[in-house]
Image (cartoon, rainbow, N blue to C red; front, side, top):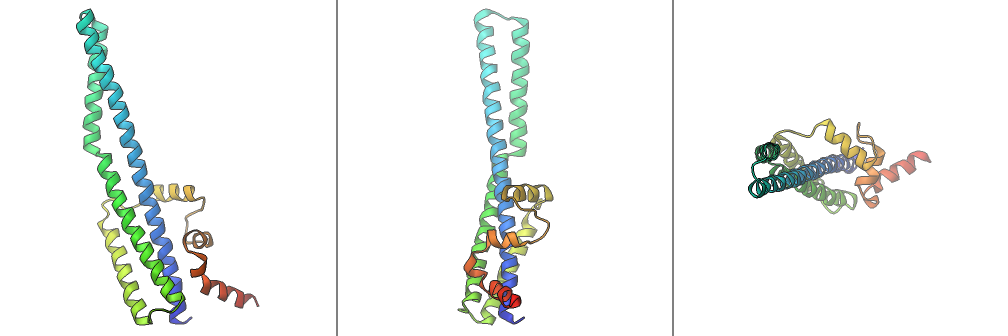
Length: 194
């Protein structure tokens, strides 16, 4: 295996890895957005019911059942607000979007580098330098994550993409790397079959 083939294989694996990371962060971001929207809707409903109960009490007198119901709804509304502020799903969603965008950029840079390898437009030294930089950035991003990606999110992405994510598979190559950049692999496969 020459240096070009080695770079080709490593870059394809790198692209697949950062693509999975990108997809996991997108899925997490979307999940946090849905939770945030759900909390807003529930708060709005309970806040409206609380206000309606107060208006009813003012107009029709202080009925014990209505006062109790309004008090419970008010408590639920305040609890929901406190819970939402403590967790802050909007902030979590934005953070996940930032990481998703970072991994997208790495993926695109790696595809560009893979293209340089396939079409031999950069020297081996230049490819080594750029690829080393990409790996360093990916490692830095992984260390910056407060609570890294766990298998729950990997399984959700795998389900979403309809592939099993035990290891890098041939389906990953087809889904994540364009056909013209797999050229070296296909040539090798054809040669080995003959």
